[in-house]
Image (tube, one colour):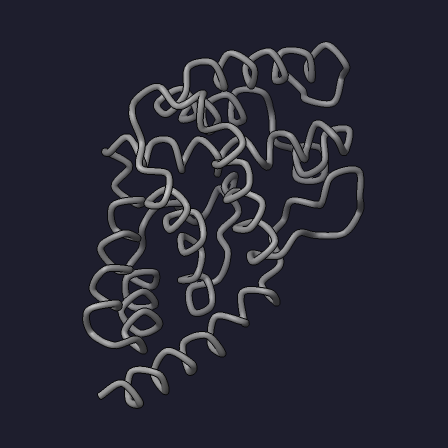
Length: 196
């Protein structure tokens, strides 16, 4: 049984290496290189640890870390959907559900069930952990775009209203991080890197 589990776990570990090849639209800080999903997830995990004191409610940081580390694994099959995409909705899709079942299903059943459940909890965004994890997911690209003089906002013609609407999700997990983010958004308009 243990050998079977190990082989399933190793196969899963090999499979998720593919997240390193999934390019996001957002670029690294002060860079013209696109971030990949693995870098994004690692960065969110570090942010979650460092910024934990700013969560509005009590959180289980280990659960948050699991959420941010696995939340984009489904993109191995489903692909990355740009948050400001006007044709595809950036919400849980049938393709992502199928991907979650296939990829996490490579693991022994107990682990697979736990990771699917954790992924679903993140997607629903209702618990303190999910709200805080989603705050990290919305804050990181904001910081990147500011560092890149508008970054994807400029590249794809994203305006203030769209940015504000997507980023206000931050306040569900952290009012202090939202206050900071809102200030950055306003300053970006003043600097001319985000159009009203």
